[in-house]
Image (cartoon, rainbow, N blue to C red; front, top):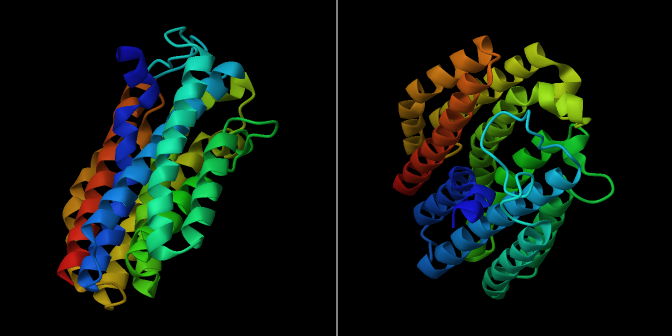
Length: 290
């Protein structure tokens, strides 16, 4: 199982859980929450995240991006633990399972769920795969914000009663910001090896200093957006609970701002992923409380 756990990247799967919790918390507040719909939404989100990890592992290995000089956890295909064929097969199976959840959700909320699912699959397959991967063209952050922010949060609210209130769109902003910060922390860590491999991430294009500022803007912007929108009642006021997570942001902010070595930046990446999960949970609880 170890090679498959390496390919699955379990810590990253929390990124797909946080927006679902937030969206479904808002559904509770609005009195439209349905447990089977929540379960199917959560399963679909995690499965699509898992498929993205598999596809990314195989695609990066094929392009030579995951070399021995890479900092961080090993990659299954690049290190020979799994074959590309095995990982692509797992990708297809995982997408199939997510599609089954999507069909159920479409029966409850309409055809737009199918459209979201198709767009999500295309996005995960072309992030580092295909003839023109957008993850190699400084567009990864934009995609992460879109799919882990508005698509995931608003979609998780929409499936309960086919409505998308403004509060869902506003909740999506802080969730999307911190999710994007996870990728920024990853890319600032890999900036040297990505540049050597010809992988033009946003961090490679704008440089280390600007990437550090982007990371801080995303983290602080997430808390500012959530606090202001809750204070004005544009999202449930109990969402002010998110400030409880602010101390968790101090360490990764300091590390990204001051460190260039791989070890500390790996720590910052993990801390950002934990922060995202806590922010999603607190916003979900706050939304449910109203």
